[in-house]
Length: 394
Ligand code: HEM
Image 1 (cartoon, rainbow, N blue to C red):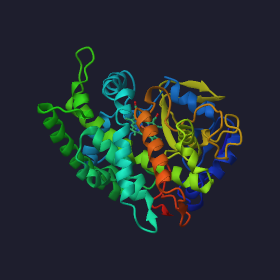
Image 2: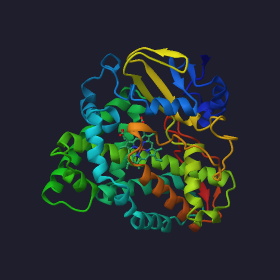
Image 3: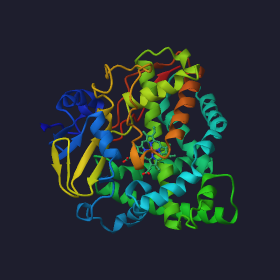
Image 4: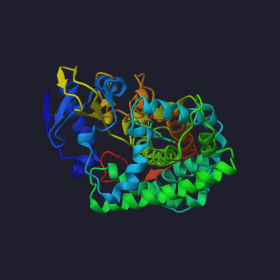
């Protein structure tokens, strides 16, 4: 197995990790990344394998869990019941109950509301130079997920703040201050959700929280802790990744000189969304742990051993994607892995795709001559690949 060294915090790498991926993609299915002291799956076939094979799970083995102090108790409580942190059989029950409320049909019904949210945001963008990341890319998903869960739109900024503070726990630059903030945000967010869920118990509506409360399979429902974790996960996962994906998409479309009139073609716009997700995805790394000793891709993994999955490198695998560094929405490819695969495949995928489709189409319809005012800078959070600011001129 080839070994590579690359600091994930180095500025040039954060701005363009794809040069590194191009280099390591010559390394086959697995590489050893010295800075992480970890084996990584980098090819399209190996990443897919680890995502789908039940011999691998997301649950962190007991002896590998970080020593957590008291300030993280509220954060841990959310994690304990989060879909993303548990494996079958517990995951199967929870996922089925969530999927029952979060169906493709219920998402499809949201289409006109999402369009309205997007158009309202666009009407307020009147300056000669506009910062689109905070004023558009972040706003669309947070308002959509708030609408879906039946949370007041006026709570959007507070939701963003809690969510950013919690998500900082998963980033390369985590430190004690960030942990304390995450613990505080988790406690406040939990208190808010408990009160909202209790309210919905007595006065249910058309929203997803009411749907989750009503969701029942073989007499089993979601417990209060599971409800809280699920709602917080949906709120966090529902906008953090989508916000970055939108910003990255806007940048790619302008930078690559795409004919934006074609975004009005209902067959073409989903292809653009898929290519944006492949070309510059918002989430680059996930992990899996071996449930047992496993021999795979000429390597022996011991039980509980961790493997890193470099989704963004798999999307640039030259064996799977012809001319992978070219942005080409017309490509006929196997699917990208940006939304995962297997049992943990993104629950929000239909929603994310629909939001991206509507937001990109409407943005470029409203501002057909959109230009970048300056080259946007990716934030220093590496695994979460996206911009803090995206300045454009209409
Ligand atoms: C472009 C936007 C998005 C991207 C790139 C993305 C990516 C992902 C990926 C890669 C996973 C699987 C992680 C793993 O296998 O370890 C995942 C899981 C998940 N995503 Fe998304 N996601 C996006 C949007 C959303 C939205 C809009 C929602 C909800 C409203 C959402 C909710 C979830 C949930 C709940 C899971 C956990 C599923 C499970 O473990 O069973 N995501 N997402």
